[in-house]
Image 1 (spheres, rainbow, N blue to C red):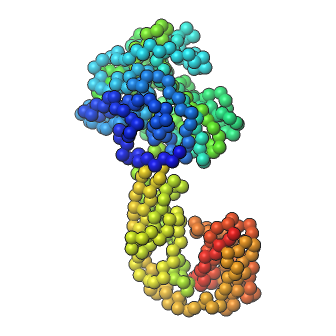
Image 2: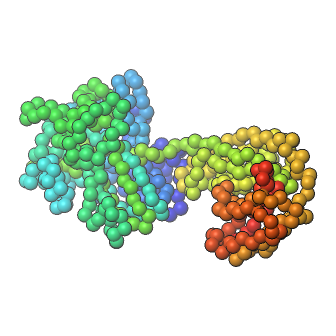
Image 3: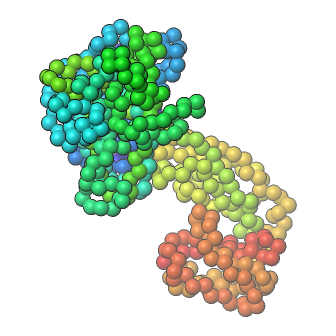
Length: 484
């Protein structure tokens, strides 16, 4: 899948999103989608994963109004503190409209009256005492898909769980719950996963960086109003993981949010290995002892390390002066294989290199404006920056000594050996082979012989630079070589 999407310009998801509801006056906006399976891949990738991940076999179970995208803009007139997330996916047991404030209905919800048969999920929730065995599962909102990655990928997810079951309806006889199951399929590459689904969003896996002032002892359990709750007035039971809970009765904390209570942002990690295939099942469910499931809960989820801009800078090495000019290695601060790099070394508007870490030879002294522009093909993000590079006049005095007539390199290209004739070169000079990133992969001192042989059969094919550095640490010879 070729993903050239702009994450900046997708505040209301493009063509394949149908806006069924959009409250532009509130600080929280929600946009439900018409569930079309082909478009779900893009939706999930844009909001939750990076471009190294491929998604296949997408399946959605639930009402189309139960899932969508959310956007949040802070409004200090409505919220005493920041809600915690700015955008992402919203999954609910009812309608995403009930996530919107003002919070003037303590028992808001939607009853789709859809029973959901899933013995694994049911037993899992029973094992954690979230529901009693007699409880049935209703009104599912389920996203299932397979994921693979071209490289090792570590993604942090931020999650806020909100519910109308707070605070008077907290009970194992009728409770909503959210799980993010991951299992490895079609092989056993990753030792951390197997064919049995694991819920990566159990409270015990919360990272300890939720808030600088948050001190909390977590009780290991999936996310639900029964496992993250304040003191229960109905059952006179103490709170559980109460430090994660935010009371929003009557919108007292944030009237842009429609739920009576919700959690602080919780952070969970998923690390996957290249070539492994995983099955992901994200599910929020309403568990009740009869067929009426009318109080909504919702989970706001986004990728934590998703970038909305490229923080760009670049560095360069000290010039190496020789008869060819001044050779400089450039290194950007942002390195990404999905990006295209445009280097302009002489400020003429023409791209001189598309390499990530290019080497450029300045043939004349002076001050050069070097410009770099980066475009990420995956995310659509771009940025540019320029800096001045000074090539000093004084160092060019030595460049007029033409040593090329005394040095020859052959054959070039080479597959087995490279021979260097170094007549009239100082002893103890250093022969170096440098790759395009500026890393020295071979070095050897010149002792007495006028002819030197370098075995390059073990060096990966590609273009390199051969550099001869005299004992005073100045480069006296620089040439590109090709190894086959």
